[in-house]
Length: 127
Image 1 (tube, rainbow, N blue to C red):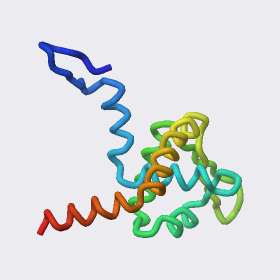
Image 2 (cartoon, rainbow, N blue to C red; image 1 turned 90 degrees about the vertical axis):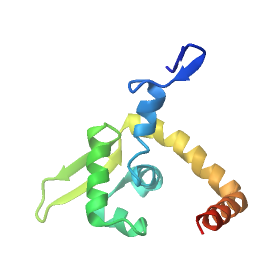
Image 3 (tube, rainbow, N blue to C red; image 1 turned 180 degrees about the vertical axis):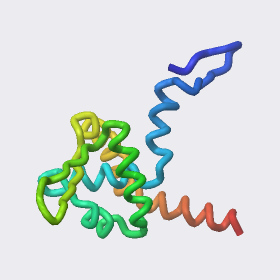
């Protein structure tokens, strides 16, 4: 947890809020989790994910999938067939993490006008 030191709030590197925010440091992680959360049968192949996430490169998708797998949020399933087949699915931990992400995405849908205004303000400030 954050700590109070001399009347100021400190977020140490190992604090839960900092560790949680690390999960958002990979640009595409929440989008991949969101896609898997809604995917039929809650599993998807790499090519399917790439086609559904406009703008993600194959390299970035593989990096994101690898990191999410290493963190225990998704599982990679390799089928014993030729040609090889691999799919990804949320782990139980990934499903619990996807819930709050869904709430944030819903907020975005409900506040599209505010997001548009915020973006316009930002672009104007950038010149």
